Length: 309
Image (cartoon, rainbow, N blue to C red; front, side, top):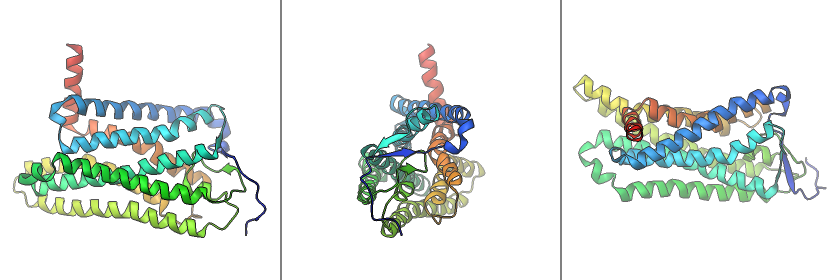
């Protein structure tokens, strides 16, 4: 039972990687490199999709939205984490913590549903190719993106409001950013209701889109296997490979982080999982979609060729 005698907390201290004190500079370099690559890669993807008319298709529209969302998502977390690794202040105001949590949740969930929209796009392209341009028209694409963003905003407002209505006794957040569970642990009162709410929301925003993507791929694979030509089958699988790679890693990390029992992992293990979905997963987007995707590579080469000529 936590004490009811609590004082007003005005700021938190993000402990980050304090247990790795002697390796802080090494960690800084290890995280800075993928952060720069993530920013550069996602910005390049957005610019190339914007300027190359060959990429003005629903799939690349969703990819540009995902790249934009991933860029903001990393900007919310990584600059503060990197600054704390080089000895800058680890304190964060309650308002700053709430703001960071709000944007982290908003864009994290938006990414989940954008990947679902991309799965639906691949399903229509392969299972209903003759009706693709009719079904995936501009209005539908904008509605799907708007829907993904709206769900992110609604869930973020619900989560942040429920967490920051709690009274806080402790000030040390055992994490490198204001994630939901580490902040809730600082409360003076029992947080069972909040934990149940967080679990319900996590199940809905991870398992529902993951289930929809899974259903899409069952239908896609069954359609591909009916194609007579081996070359056409290979081409159809290739169009889905990039998306499927990102989906498996993204939903896999999110499931491990938010659907596991709260006491199962140590603080260091939790932070390692968090590093995967805040540093590694955003880097996957530009790497997978540019290195594994022939259309994106060709567009990049065309852009470089225009710049050099």
